[in-house]
Length: 409
Ligand SMILES: Cc1cc2nc3c(=O)[nH]c(=O)nc-3n(C[C@H](O)[C@H](O)[C@H](O)COP(=O)(O)OP(=O)(O)OC[C@H]3O[C@@H](n4cnc5c(N)ncnc54)[C@H](O)[C@@H]3O)c2cc1C
Image 1 (cartoon, protein in one colour):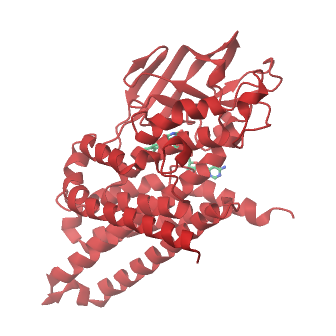
Image 2 (cartoon, helix red, strand yellow):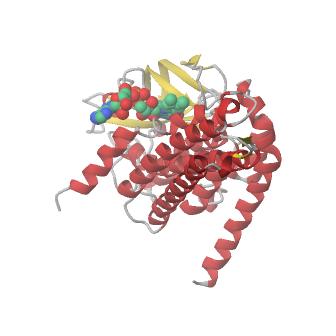
Image 3 (tube, rainbow, N blue to C red):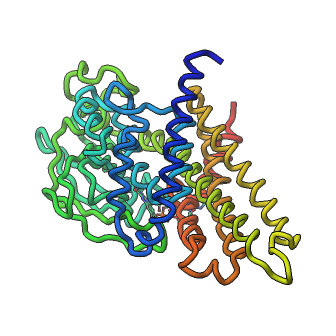
């Protein structure tokens, strides 16, 4: 190992250690009450700002921490061990930032990333619609060019952080015949004022959820909302090519028609994130189970001394260990610049299913207490299913994995 690597590892360990202490001292004791009240964790979000977590994966050149994928996965794991919603607060923000840093123009990067790195400017990611989720290519939201602007009409569903966001990475369809010469699904960087209304954008409803509470997931409607053409991610293909230097966007001839491909690339970061969330929730379920099994007595001894419970703990620890290794493996491959569709898909599939299984195991081990809101395991049980749905369902992960395995050479 080189000196530089060792120094980087030391910094990463220090970040994780600070976060772990905060999670144990603040998040674990306070999160259940906030979650049950569906209350936004303002003070926790401010502390996350202070830790620099809104800039976790944003390049240092734009004020972020530029953490590698492994460290970022460990950060998400720690947050989720305390309360999975905290990971949700930074995740869609960082997917939006990733799209800008990888595919944006210099102007787009300079304009949005510094504010996003501090957390003062919050981002969200808006692909899903009422009639399209897994089949993202079927989206209907339309963006029609009118001079130097695009006019956006459509309804977007499941927008996490949509109300608080000041910038939306919005996927919309540019109809055929656009003068840029290409057409198709395009990502727009839509600036808005945080709140329920901004221009032609309305937060039409807040979706009530069984878990992942405390942060907003909303439906947003766009009625004749106007966006300047220079807010097409990567440029609109008509402007001066010099404004597109650097980043993966260089040389692509503009962002029109590239939105879905770029969004799916950014979601690979999202999949490692969801896998890490799964590991965090599974760890919390495991820790609670071990503690409870040692102190709860039945038939004259701690339930941990009954083999049925002890074996369940052994199985939980084994699955948790495997989920963590798979997640770090995907993150390491991403850090090495390798293709990660297969590794991230496998990690996301396994870790999310593990979180769901372990949260139910924890509830069984807690008996009746597991069914009460006085113990946090009921929250893990309500939070875990989101991970088998978001950033591609388990079925979609199996499609991604099998396609990678069965691809012709
Ligand atoms: C709390 C929450 C937060 C979210 N946040 C965001 C967000 O911030 N931004 C955003 O854009 N989206 C967000 N989403 C949306 C999420 O990404 C979608 O819910 C997810 O992609 C699944 O899409 P869907 O709900 O339309 O289900 P569908 O696509 O309708 O799927 C229904 C079922 O059919 C299965 N299925 C579909 N196609 C296939 C196939 N080809 N083969 C086999 N099975 C298939 C699915 O696996 C699933 O079991 C969020 C969702 C939730 C619940």
